[in-house]
Length: 341
Image (tube, helix red, strand yellow):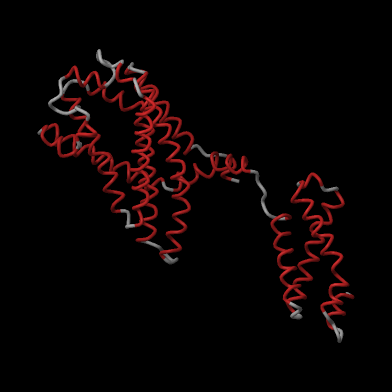
């Protein structure tokens, strides 16, 4: 190989090295520039065949330059050209639309499936909170005021009349007035629920304890309010009022808690790798889950602020809530062909 002999020959220099090989570097750089500007479709078949050949020639030049300690400027040029060539020749190039499609169809559902154990734990914690408050308020209504603040209750408490409670569900004579300003209500609900979910996720690093407490509280106010409406004979109506958006909202809450718990358990039980490495790995999965959680909460906010107010038929509310939970379960947990690939 003449190039290699020239390296070993006396008097070998950067100038001679350039003279023998620079034509390949220039040709490779020109093809890369064309590829960057116009894409692979702009290259002829001969140029496409030349790309990997020129890439390997550039790598060979870089290897010789390193071995013979040539000047740093030439070495930096060859390293930059080789790295640029790697990403353009062998790197995966996807458009933004393709990356978004991949995230929606594959990455997000895969991340949710990865935290299925944590999701079950959080769902049980929410259920435990609901059972606890429901049993306490059912036995003594005064417990209600310890669980639900006045601003959240909005007059829906044990002292409220059946007619007033029914009107808050959209069935009373004052239901029409409740439908005004729905966009403001939807925005408030989305902001509030997103804040609680993000906090539940963000506090997961503290071994998951604050996350479990926040999720337990989510169940507390739910069970207390259910006890009040049940005591007035409005349990089924309240269930429909909640179900239309609650299946999406509570599922999102469970996922946000699961994301926080994934990070907390990684910090507490890092395994063979260090805590920072385990937390970083868990954080990548949890971050994908949380992007989806915000989208789910947006859907829940629209259902809560608009759908629940405009759709007053209890059976239809249950039907929409059932369709939503079936959609989310199918979206997350039905395997996809590309996942296996």
